[in-house]
Image (cartoon, rainbow, N blue to C red; front, side, top):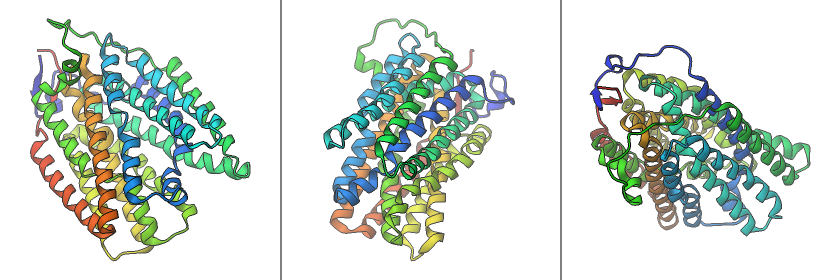
Length: 415
């Protein structure tokens, strides 16, 4: 049965003090390689849409939200499929393979908008399929008291790939005189390497759930984790905060317009936030294991609120740029893996991937609404009123999350 505790050290699970286990490191290596492949072709999307295609902020907000939220159903189905028979590695493998093949689609599209769109959609579908099974594998490979550290190590390795990907793309373009086909070919090969690493290095971790008394209907099975009150509170808090998160791309566009630096530097902006994320992901996870994961999760969103407020000040130049990127990196380090570590112990092993998929889907859909809403506000009111509205929304959501998130953390231990 489930036992609620207020201190991880008092649980029946033995407290671990050693290194992160091999499966977590193997999954981190897979994510590192896959992110190099992915970020090689996605670093310039905001610039491409707004500067080259001339889309309005409203159109870009809709596309940016759709790009990140359209895989909601696939994410849910992927998590549900992974839980059936404990096929986490198999389902994650199909997701990684689909993302790798999408790079080949970019190569074959010949620059056609429809082909590029289909390839990007395939990449997002692959990401949607693999994310929840991968995170479930991480949570099933580490004890409850070390989940923050495990997710922090994985996210740090993942972010290393996000840092190296744009750099690799720029190096290739410089060496080949802007031959984008070379970027697509290398990205495809690196993506295949990630799939190979998953097959060879990651062991199968099969959960053995107790047989249910009756086969639930598909919709009931997908939503079953919401029956748990603690998970439901985490889900609602994360969804509210997601609905008040306007998206990184808008922050980068606001910085570019505010500071008026050359657009050629725009694709390098994510590297600043990613570097901070890389440095702080493991410490944030370890801190969450010690004092409770709700604290860094809330602090991370407070850092994001600080970034929004800075963009409303009269500051300018390099200090403003560095401060906003720093706060954005703190936000990701303190929330991304920490949220999965917070939710993992609440979910039974046989519903781990389904629950994480549901949580990730709720966030994605709410961020879709936030991106579209901020784009509409920017188009109709201008940047400053839109930012003021974003600050107010995030402040209210943060207050609600303080009240909603459980103050005690549950660990799955045998009675």
